[in-house]
Length: 321
Image 1: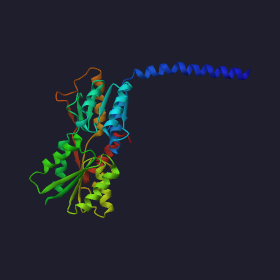
Image 2 (image 1 turned 60 degrees about the horizontal axis):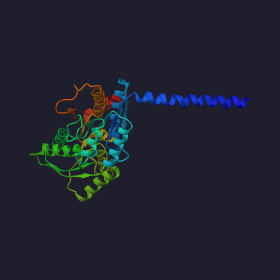
Image 3 (image 1 turned 90 degrees about the vertical axis):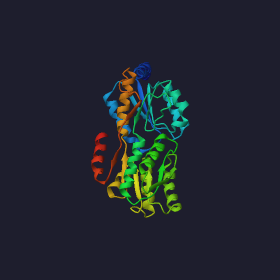
Image 4 (image 1 turned 30 degrees about the vertical axis):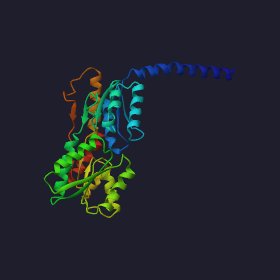
C-alpha cells in the first residue's frame, strides 16, 4: 500500500510538472529575445558580452544573448541567424563575416526580424542601422602610430582575419591614406580566416620571406598577440615596430613594456550595450535613436604606454570586476 501511495504521489507531481511546462514556455515566449551575433570566436567579444549583460540588467523584460558561430564562415553564420529567426528572435545585431557576399542572406534575415549591424557594416542590405567604429578612422590612427614610431620611414606588413570583410578593407585603406606623403609603406596584408594558428604562421613566414620588414600591423584583435609571439620566438621583439588593434591582454602588456608601439582600441562594450538598448527601443516603435544616415559611430582611441593601466582599470569596471 505504501509503495502504491508513493507511486501515485510521484505520478501526481510529474503531472504537475508537465502541466507547468507549457505555462513556463508561454511565459518565456512573452519576453522578446534580442541576439548579438559575432563573426567568430575571439576574446575580443568578451567586452561585448559584458555590454549585453549590462543592457540585460537594465531591461529585464527582454532576453538578451550573445551568439558565436561554430566557425567564421558565411554559411555557418547565416544558418545560426536563420535558426534564431525560427526560434522567434525579434532583433539581431550582427558582425557579418563577409558583407559583400552576404547581401541576399542578410536581406532575408532583415525581412523577418529587425536587423542591425556592428563591427563590419553591410550598407547595401536592409539593415536598420550600423553601430560601431569608423574603420577608416581607425586605420588612420594606426598610421599615426607608425609615423610617430618610425619618423625615418619603413616597410610594414599587415595581418588580418577576413580580407574580404569591410572592417578589414576599411582599416587597410585608412592606414594607407594616413601614410600618404611619408616614407612608410604598407607593402602587403596577409589573411588567416580567423585561424589563430595560421595567423602566427603568417607572421613567421613573413619574417623569413621579407627580412627587410621594419613594421608589422595586426588589424584584428588576435593578430597583434600572434605577431608578438612570433617575434618573441624569433628573438626579434623590440627590433620590429608593432602597430596594434584592440585590447587583448598580450597586446596591452606589449604596449606597456614598449615592444608594441601603441594600439587602436574600439569599444565593443558600447556597441553591445547601446546596440541592445537601441534594438529594444526600435521594437517598441521608438525610432528616434536611428539617424538618417543609419550610422552610429563609437570613436576609437589610441592607447600608448602611459595609458595602459588606466584603460585596463576601466575595462574591469565595465565588466563589473
